[in-house]
Image (cartoon, rainbow, N blue to C red):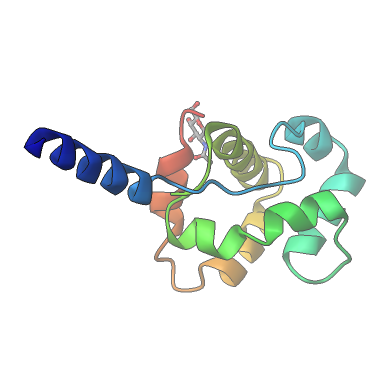
Length: 123
Ligand SMILES: *[C@@H]1O[C@H](CO)[C@@H](O)[C@H](O)[C@H]1NC(C)=O
């Protein structure tokens, strides 16, 4: 009986601690294809930087951006980490000027980006 109660308590604890992952419009979005098209990439970035309109899919990613960055993607599932990895790769390598603007807006004091990028490396 005692061990049953202990076990129940443990299960409850684990359940309470389980991560609630972000919900997006499409975790398997082909972000590499999008970034190859400079018009689409610019639209995507403009949405994130609040200088252009957002389509529904991009908005579904953006809504979690501040929290994801500040928490090193704690609530990102593997597919979402892959999206972040590829997006940041593209920002850095294809358009470093966008990367700089991203950093200015989402991590102005340069506190979070290093851990955030580390968390998604390899995905
Ligand atoms: C994405 O993952 C690769 C390893 O697969 C890593 O080398 C790269 O630094 C990651 N990109 C970013 C922006 O963290």
